[in-house]
Structures are given as C-alpha cells and as structure tokens.
Length: 256
Image (cartoon, helix red, strand yellow):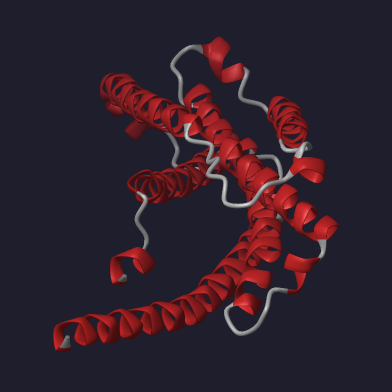
C-alpha cells in the first residue's frame, strides 16, 4: 500500500515538473524564435543581400517561421496558465491550424529550395549555374507557397486535432542537395588551385592595383560562403528536430 502511494506521489511530482517545464520553456522558445527571426529579417533585408538568391530564400523562410511561431505558440503559452481561449472558437482553431501547418511547411520546403539553389550555384557546369537566379528562386517560392496553401486548405473546414503530419519527405532532399553542394564546392576549390599554380609568377609580376570587378566578385563570394554556412546550420537544425519527432520524444516525455 505504501509502495502504491509512493508511486502515485512520484507520478504527481513528475507531472507537476513537466507542467512547469512546458510553461517556462515554451516562453523561452517563443522569445528566442521571435527575436531571432526578426533579426534575420532585418539583416537579410539589407541592400547588399537583396540580389543574392539564397539570402532571399532565407528572408522568406524567416517570415514564414515568424508567422508560424506567433500563431502556434502564443495560445499554447496562454494554455499553460489558463484555458486556451481559442479552444472554444471553432473558426479560430481552424485558422490557427491552417496558418501553423502551412507556414511550417513553407519554411521547410524553402530550405530545400535553398539547398537546390546552392547546389546549382556551386556546380562546375555553367548551364546549372545560370539557373541559380533570383528570378527563378522567386518563381519557385511562389509555387511552394501556393501548393502549401492548397495542401492545408481543407483544415479551414474539416480540421481535427492531434494529427501528426510533418513534412518528412523534404528532409531527404535537404540531405541530398546539401551533400551535392559540399561536393561541388570541393571540386571548385580543386579547379581554382589547379588554375592558380601555373600563373603564380605572372601574377606576382603584375601591378597590385585592385580591380573593381575582382573586388565585387570577392564580395559576392564572401556572401555566398556566409549564406552557405547559414544553410548548413538550418539543415542540421531541421534534421535534429526531425529525429526527435520520428522517435516520438521531447524534453517533456523524457521527464515523464
């Protein structure tokens, strides 16, 4: 009897810890998510990055993530302290589900688009590099947004809660084009070193006066390297989150 009472007390204690954990951690996630995405939007909106196709994708992805966080976590934080006001409003609950799922899907597939764009831009094939343009990226972003909206439009009239529907297929493409991009970068570096070695003497004999075209090209290459590092971090983060989802685990379930 005492053992049963001890187990019940332990369960109550762990449930209480889990509840407190959900309350305060969700607030931290909300704050970091909102502040981080707003900073991304401010940085990626700068004039120097507007013409970079990958930076433009990150800007659109940050906007989608910000909308998803604002619609998804705001009411969840409120429900940790009191009753969720949207639970009793049918149209509001459906709208929240539609916005959260569609924007989350848009953000995930935009990262896929970014990996494809980096693969094209880093390719040694000139025809592939020519396809990595801001116009093409904007066109595909529009397609992704439209398809995501159409995919989750049914939630506006037939939504049911507690359904797991994560965009897992896009993670395979993230890995594939991420690895192909790394391979292209290594091939390009090897080609550059091979071309530079025979011309070292001739370059040293020339004037060291900077050329505007070379300066601009180096600036663009620096931006490309920066957005590539950002892309790899984004892919790693999403793959980590996907592994948690596939195992059905979270910090909350571990405590429980």
